[in-house]
Image (cartoon, rainbow, N blue to C red):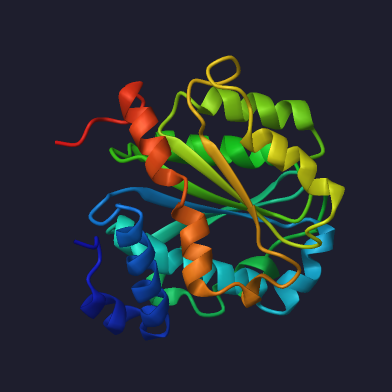
Length: 242
């Protein structure tokens, strides 16, 4: 059973109904129907991301993540972290107020900087711990390039492996770019030598992520989550199902 019903989505966010339905199909396919989890969105606000904000790609991703979140979390909101050289904003996007929300947030932000993954990860960890959440979290972490501090990003990911957080990295831009070699390595960090469990996934959404179908995007967003849940429960990182 979804956390938020189709009827409620139809009433509060009619534009997201088809996304909500597509997300439901993917969750069922991956054995996640009825699962409860917080869903976070982390968005790259570095200078090279400007075209993706301008053409609505970032808003489209936020809408898709909201459609997914409605199945997993009953509060109807997704906490969102915008990051560049620093953390630019920690805010949220709600079902009832999703249209044009990214544009409104970005209007209040300053200069677009570089990419400090570890600061964005720290902001998510703080938010999650402060929220007193009882359920695990799926963190959709979007970026169009590698981090300014690779060592710090790796250290944060390895430390966070002891927390009930799964990091699903999503690349925007040129699939052949060497910028993403780091994320592929991050995805494959050794277990248990470096981290307690494999707590991250990575996929590339291409130069125009809006061309990725809803079905494919949701399959990629939740594809590795079930395996992590099993491993994290076995290690006592995520509470066992009752």
